[in-house]
Image (tube, rainbow over the protein chains, first blue to last red):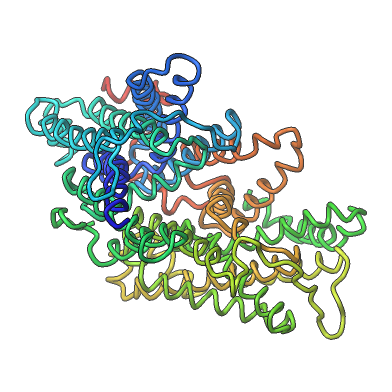
Length: 288
Length: 333
């Protein structure tokens, strides 16, 4: 039982880790948070569900649909909540994304109904068994995707020209723009990429839980943010670590405390880390 | 607007007083009075959140939870111990204020973005505790049969009684908040909102005044919750979730942050919309979200707010494409 919970925790942790990366992408660039990221994730899940139900049962196409839907939503949110609000204190942008979060959730409720839709499962067969604990192909795939994403993003940021430009903008927005970097394009790209990643994870989560509903984004967003703060919101490896630790702790708390208090543990971790170690486990010491 | 109001304040005030006092006569039906009562509860709730957001410049997404704590505290005292309303309501308020002070002491050093998430997580924690503590809160079943209050041997039975009680309460609370705003304390809050560093170098205890604002705001939210619990006589945890916090936040943002009249206008508009447009039923949440986005982008301080928190950092125009001629000339010169 213990081992099984740990394995489930790892699989779930991959989801948290990927959402946490989406948060830290935007945070790293602008020191801002897109509150509606959870709802972008939900939107991606619906896009994937629509594709699976009405177009083709191909998993890759569904994941791509989630990616595209998330990209579009991230792009739109950047244009409205950040580009149009430049020069206004940051908090206004945050409140605007809170508005987006509700807008998207209610829109989904209005369009698809509040009830949970069933999502068919993929690769649910057991890949192998260790000490009576089953590991499914899907779980392996999820962990693989999370680690691949981390490596890809690290390569993007530290090995390419656009990554260099992004780091320059993150360091000093004004100076980077004076040096001729297209700061608007880079910000837009980071937001879209962050949204796309969230939408992509939404499809994965929908498959893993076999469910899609309009309120799935709220908890996922808050957990993803918790994972980001837990591991260190300023670094991508930190976000990954935070995601896996959170997944593990949550599933062990189900084992040892009670399933009713599973979210309680996560939120408590969020508050404690915000208070005592806002830079997270791996985060660089900056003033938050 | 302000000058106009000052000139005609006596007739406007009298007209408003007649309207508010005569509403039970004018409305003539129970349903409208119940809506007016709920409107008044939200007016007080929005005004109390304005203490945190508008006066001190901190954003909290946990107000629905404090409203719920007040409601549950009063309901539990009234149903399990059978205490009277005039005792449970202040106790509920004090209890909520204590919880608020505790949370404030812990989280108010956080930066704005993190405070939003911290209060949001706190709100969820409160909801989870209510759901998982059946011996005290009856868990997901909620608390039914909360008794109607008896004040000085007089039982509040009709909607008219409730209406007058909430009217007195709302007017009193708005008056208290207005006096606070214009007191030494209120000036300290505004100083913090405008510039924390400057305020602290002028000898304002930034953290202390923040905690004070948070505590007072929670006190009022708790009182509102207690009132609501006895008014509707049934409460459950899902009435005080994230949606509630969002609704109150939207009221403040729409009406205007930092002014006395702003949250009142916001609460009245948002409570009137679902009644005026019945066909919008399913679409209501979408509309609320759209309103918040629209208001914050076009006029971040709201309809009747003070610029304060949202004064642009530089003198540059917010929407260059609206001032194309001017901007073009400047660029050309």
